[in-house]
Length: 189
Image (tube, rainbow, N blue to C red; front, side, top):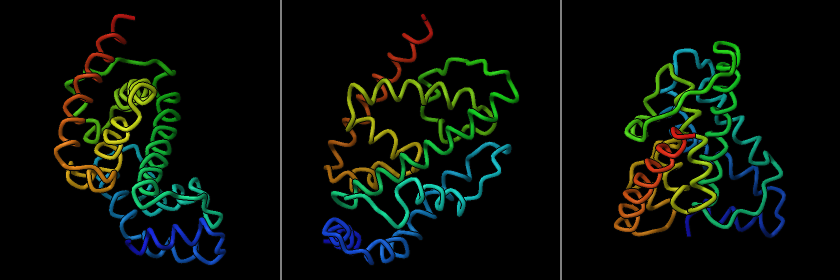
């Protein structure tokens, strides 16, 4: 077991000091994920990677960490927390700049979600489709979130989810096709 998994087990067993040990152990990895994500954010995004890590840590429970099943569960939750923070901030900026109007995102654009520089509307449209997909296929949606919002490679995401790389590749192909279909359906509405 990794050090992170051991500490997560201690937290689950009620060790009050284990949460203090967890943050220093995962901080650099979380900071790397946040920095990678932030490097492709809109110029309007004023949040710094360090602030994103700290806000995500607080959303995850701060010192009162919940019971994490394993390392993949923790980092999946961290990726989701970062995603939600960035989505919330994009919504606030869009509401101010554009009066709250929404546009549809092309599925061809889904590979570029992490590269969206100044298009919060496109990011939000993909976010909405991703939520619908997550209701249908939660594990495949988790892979998509790790790829786009935590900026993990396919190999890293497979390792984080504890699935074979071949499975991750198949899920990735299936996910992109389904997201394309959902984007098309959303356009018709």
